[in-house]
Image (tube, rainbow over the protein chains, first blue to last red):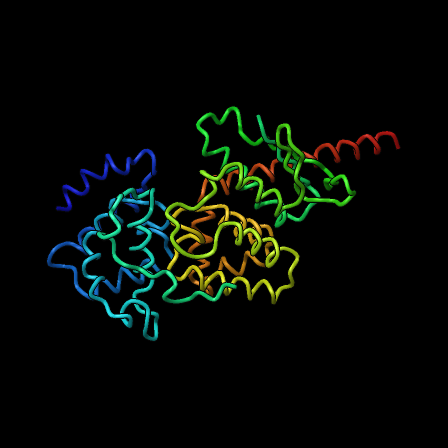
Length: 132
Length: 208
């Protein structure tokens, strides 16, 4: 499936528009294979959460096919996470991953156009809101 | 050209950047870049409103009264260019207008401790949000980012990963083409005024 994803990528996220560097492409490949069938473990999920701690998208600021494919592979897993796994615990759970999943499913730049019922339910006020 | 934004080169950058980046974002969103929607002029003095108060920015609208000051200009731009400046797919939370108030009242002219408090609130707000309102950068992000970016002391707080969510958000805002273009244009205008001054100096030297 990674081969198909990479092929589709050239039409959905044209390289000349986004200016992917060789490092970007290596990162896309890395996350496509890490989240692939057979290698997607809890450890990989936590690794991606930590990767997204200081990044808007998997590449940092640019959108890519890695955001789309990893979202599709993680969305149903995330539905089964407890509140503790989502945002709790000493290091805040998988909150960075949750923020990124919610952005991917709603961002016009990614352009998934999902029905509300297909989306992972994310309460953006679940943690953090103190703004008055 | 239907809108003209006057920018004072004497005003604090924090009061100028929000309107400047918003105007640049509007111009970038329009296909024909050769004919900008919002024309920019840089003035080497503060901009007086009819009542005599000095302002950092003013927006002149065709066939309409000009508006003065950061907050009024941001509100006018949001009204006239809502499709560009509103966040997409917003479902919950405060509106863009409330964040314009947050940026202009909590970040501009506030003391260090008050701004740190505001940054803490921003960081908490951004925990599960990629952008301040909705799922795209909006005038809320531009107002808050511009006000912080224009003050090196405050901007250094979000440049460090202490407030991890605000830090991640600021990195994204920094990478936006309209942010870079706006800051570059302002720097060019500031630099352009210097040679004029130095040539005057030279004349004086020659005369003396």
